Length: 258
Image (cartoon, rainbow, N blue to C red; front, side, top):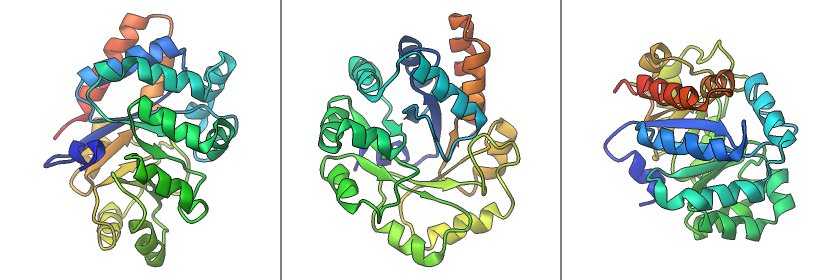
């Protein structure tokens, strides 16, 4: 059983996303440690990218801030390597395929293993566009986490179920991250339809920004993913690090209502 699978064993999972390097990598390290202490079950670490197709304005702006201060994949992996013995939760890298191609696929997988990365999410890389890459991840003990949306066809779900592991990322709406409209309606039916074809945990993200929204979802999904709301807290408190860490911790605790 992978480290990510264990995070769902007999319980629901709170999954948080932050953009690496926002406001800087030293603070990213401290935020990850704080979220680990606060009871988060899985940590997604975003690789900043100039043209993030799945991300809304909040994460786009965080990526721009990180890129401006020189954050890159090499520095992110080194930061994760430096703290790997101090955190207990699985780390998932989330980013776009150009960053990985530029770094080198085999080198990326090798260095991710050294940095204790447990899973990878690449929104712009469908499983059937680069099957060899996803196979290599599995061979090296890294879960390829794939995404589905409310309009994913049943035939597509059947195919995705053969390739994903760890958990399946269910996008809550037809849009981008941080959309306050999300999640949309028919979530029970959405989860039931996905479970017909997928036998690993399913987690829902995009637009989840409060305990009230979590309450409306948690009965239907195995995990909740929160990103933009957390990044807003980080940005609002970037000039007071101790207050930032305290509010990050308090917010993540408030989401874990199960």
